[in-house]
Length: 200
Image (tube, rainbow, N blue to C red; front, side, top):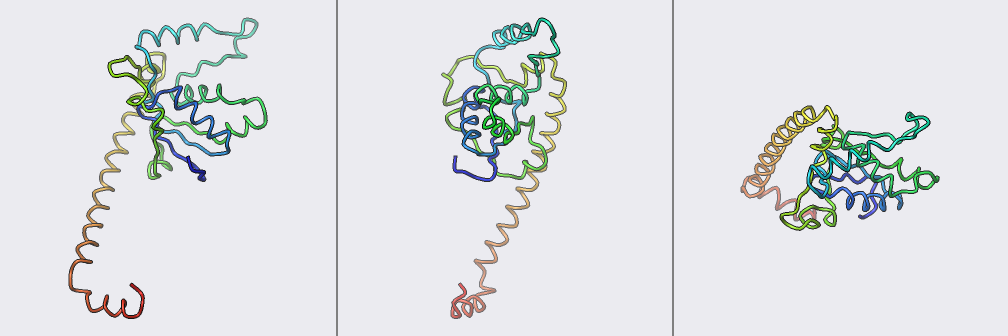
């Protein structure tokens, strides 16, 4: 990635580990990264296999005091955050600073819905997973393990998509009007004067 103030990544149909490795490298180089639509990240393997892995993870605890961790976050955004954190030396100053530059969201919240979003080609499921292989959508796995906001995020996403479609239709109509005005002969004389003065 070219260094920018902030990079917004649309995580839809990306593989969890591949995306986490790319994002962790960018964070360590000083890039601020925002990952949206974390509920649509994919994990290789069937749902049953991933449920069994999650059950084994839930059994990990601190025997003297379980409140000390490990903490088993069920929101897809927190699962992605923890995966990235595992690839960053987060207990050092450098790693802590890198993790401070990361934000993960389920859905696409207000400030980022109008910003340009990027994909990571090396982490896309269609590029990394052989056709016909099983995969699990992280939002579905989280929902089965106690995440309560699947329907809410789905509803908010539907609203956002409808609003985005309206904006795009209005923008397309405005562009068509400008194109038609440029082609018309109504401003030919004015354009000729501007061109003569060196303004065109």
